[in-house]
Length: 144
Picture 1 (cartoon, helix red, strand yellow):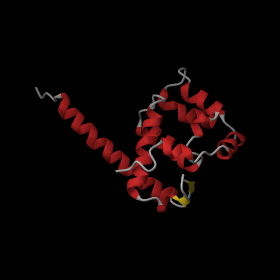
Picture 2 (tube, one colour):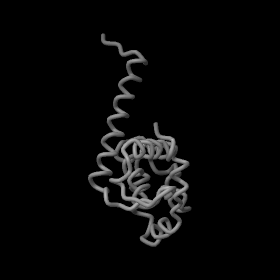
Picture 3 (cartoon, one colour):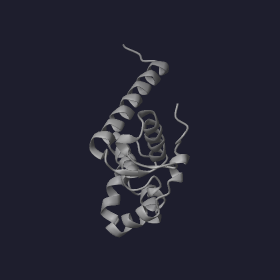
Picture 4 (cartoon, one colour):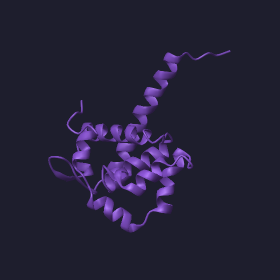
């Protein structure tokens, strides 16, 4: 019987995470490249964010989503895309935060529940409360 050691599983996990990060960065560049983003030091569009910096932001966004229990690639990607197209601190909106923490909803279904329970007005408030400093919390300027 084939036995996979923990060390081997961790290696596979690392490779899978790097590949997912790369795919998500490519998706942002290709499908949301012209979205305007206010970073701590400037206003730019996604395609103009250097790859090493956007990778840091995306990786930290994935970690932020995981803090809500989100684990599926689809839901993680949706969370990160929302950070870029609405606000890096979108999850601080009271209704959105409540939905993302709602344990009656499976963690990977919470992003979908946002569409069912929020209004355009909620998302306008999210955009009005855009906090560019949230990118610093997410590691802007700490890229390697």
